[in-house]
Length: 211
Image (cartoon, rainbow, N blue to C red; front, top):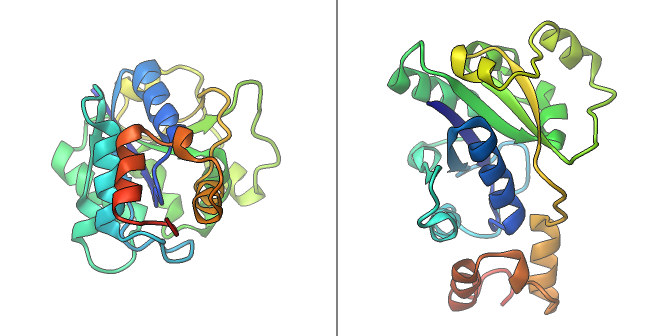
């Protein structure tokens, strides 16, 4: 089975995150491991602790077939670099197991700022989640050159090969963002519909994000 890593701050996890994970699991017949970053190197410090964010993720995906929480980045010290996570998983799964990295279009376009980003395709496939009808345009030249010859439109390639392919995946129209969700929480705006009920209860009971 194809294993997909879906990393992020998840501060907090919302229904948009879950829609992406579900769409990828269903379309690619994959297990999606949601990996909360303990110390994200590319953004400000999270508003909730790493353990709180992991607990909210666990509540959000409870009972969801094909989705799994992976806490490995919480168990490491230092910045949560994706390349290190992929190296660990490659050691665990073996060289021939299909492994992929699921990421949004914005994160994908920012890959050249990631640590050892050129080595990612040697470790895993890249699955880029995008909205229906949207086409990735104006890739940074260095990224376009690095990915030349790696693109595929065949999901079977991701199961047949262990790494090295780039696939775009339509995941539906989603408008949730963690930034706007936190703003709604802090200002008393409408927010509960943006998260699973168990996550909403957790946020209230732990007085997170200005509640």
